Length: 89
Image (cartoon, rainbow, N blue to C red):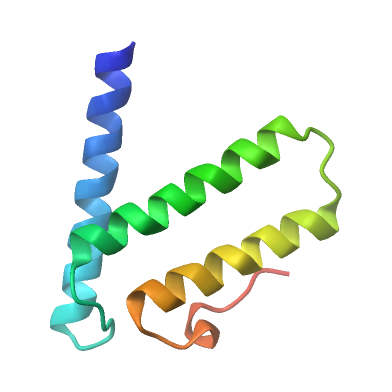
């Protein structure tokens, strides 16, 4: 199970890094290191996911707040305006 999960995580990060690199090539994202940005974004996302799972029954308001934090964090990592990521209502 560990090996399968590790391969899935590596593939997820490879795809994520590739998407960031594409955005950088089109001058849509502005970060120094796509791989490092990928790691920081996914670590933040993983941490939020653990908290949401650990706290079953999290109020909808808190879920929306966590989603906003994720958008803010990703925007900061990618050097873009958070508004360009949109929001889910």
